[in-house]
Length: 264
Image (cartoon, rainbow, N blue to C red; front, side):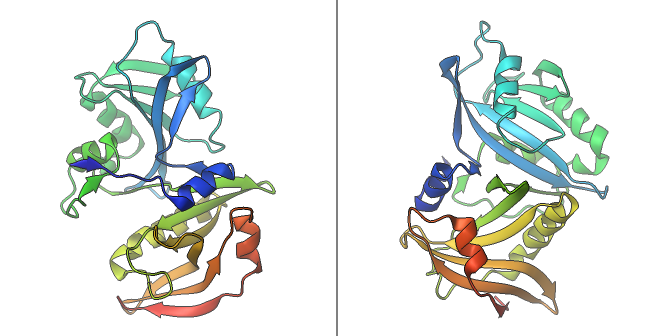
């Protein structure tokens, strides 16, 4: 099974505009060979609060000469939001994890150790889910596969965000195959939309959903304020075309939204 490729015209645009973008590589300034793929995932179990975990999947094997605590803290200083803890992963090793919680780094951890940390936050997050959606043709990262075997409750990754005018702006990205001029969100994804809206509301983040197609550079469908009632998704939406020099947040603020309903 192949890893999902997230590099496309919109993620490249966001990265160039200084957005934090999930699935991108980060390199340690003091050693360019120390590289990790970064993601942020949020989880919801029985507690009202969400668990937020910053995840670093290191590309190269562990090097005992590297001070990984310093490396992880340097990456952490750039993400602008405060996770509950950071999980470092070196795939294909028995003791393949490390956890930075507060100022303390615990190394050489295994699956049991990680599950205990999750359980300390919310026991409902641990245990294989009673229902698992079929895997796509590709997977997001090592943690995506690991979590399917070891975790329950709701979880999702954060696609992109930026701090602007002292406010964190979150973007949820959808990449359908169909043209954005005809695409509408699916009811099967209603839980994702509603949970992310709840997550952003708790933390006073601004949320915008964006659908785009790799074959239609510049064209996006923007939608927000998603609700789900009577088996229908209701939301405000507008189509927009952005150019490389545009500020996407300013462009979105200027567009006029209209009501739309999806029964897909």
